[in-house]
Image 1 (cartoon, rainbow, N blue to C red):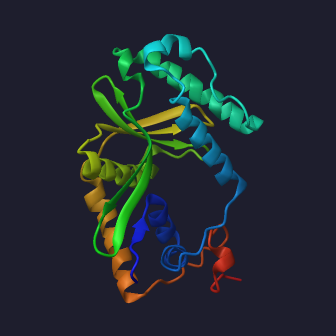
Image 2: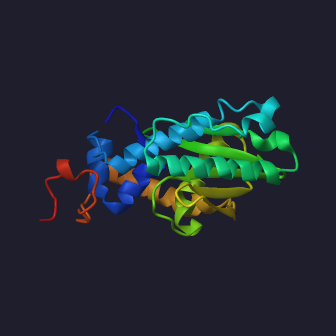
Length: 233
């Protein structure tokens, strides 16, 4: 294997669901199946990201009354975008320092080396400064809404990328559920990456070296199902 493999939070999630599906996708480089909900999520993430491109930091009061990029969406997507606008207006009203309204980072891609075989790669949806807090944030655009404890793996993964690339350390982690207009936040867990994520990445690395990826046979919703010869009948 000459080319390094990118390990993202999605790749880790795929590995935990089925190591063999990970092998098909990341080692053999076969594409995952796309679903309408995934396409809708990409569109909304793009709209959320571009929202801040048309908000002028010197004219916040004026621009926050507008509804930029409010076109080209289904009613389902429209509702989530309207929620996103309300979420940002609430943030603005709650801020003591209004200049902190604009994110420190938005939709930022980071790749860092892990070892000679693996790179860690991720896109952080947003990093906010909220008065004395720095919040590493992820957007969730589907109808699924779990307790924030279910998302600690990906949030700690993003936190590590931010730490290594920019020497910035989040004080809090957050998930914005746009369908529900709900923001869940928790204090950052500085050791979570080392204790919970590194062992998984090291296991993946060992299995790559040993070429040892076994199927879980949890096939119903598998994104690699169409490529798999081991699908449970």
